[in-house]
Length: 88
Image 1 (spheres, rainbow, N blue to C red):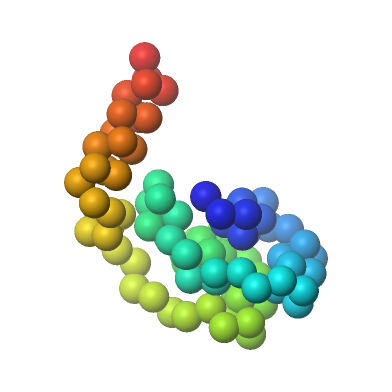
Image 2 (spheres, helix red, strand yellow):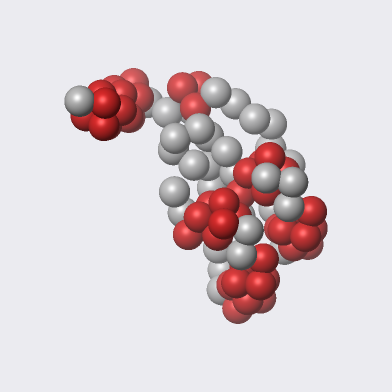
């Protein structure tokens, strides 16, 4: 996860606003676990203020995809290994 994903997850809108106003962030980065962008995650969390902030600062509407459609076979295998390790 990127810092931005974590902040959206926690709904820290004031921190997000500060970062967006002062730093250059990849607003369209996909989260490895599920392929969600910060904007998609904010929509899932029903965070209208964060959605508005992200769009204002240039986040693009990107269609949701299954993470397996944009990760390599090696990345998928590594992600599965992590899941299995957590289950053991």
